[in-house]
Length: 140
Image (cartoon, rainbow, N blue to C red; front, side):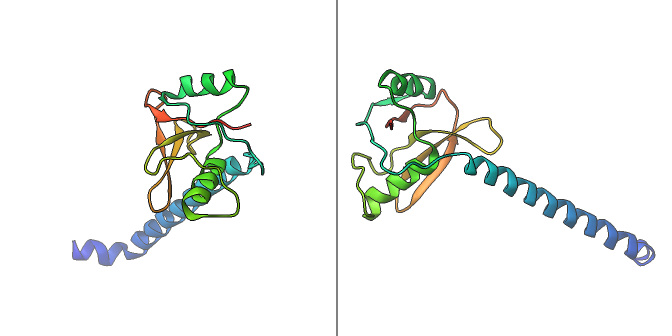
């Protein structure tokens, strides 16, 4: 093994360098994809929030909001509202339950699952399959 390393150290360094470059390129691509996804979402000031609509799967949540003439908030809107209520910012949305996950209209960066957000000492968003049941608040 020692002889192999001695004879091939330059090839090993090149290989390690290539792996590092691939990792960096992948990280940049993921950052760009996530950044582009986020930039397409509009965080509208002055949103009007519905009351709690109950706990339901994602498809029912979308249907419920649509039936009210509303929509699910994107994850930025939801994060701002949760942070506002629990950290006391300038405007108040009220009605969120600490620790409860709320559906958003935002898909994860791969585009496979929707994000649900909660507040427990800070805002936390994670992915959830559409069959999972989460709390629902709508906006318009």
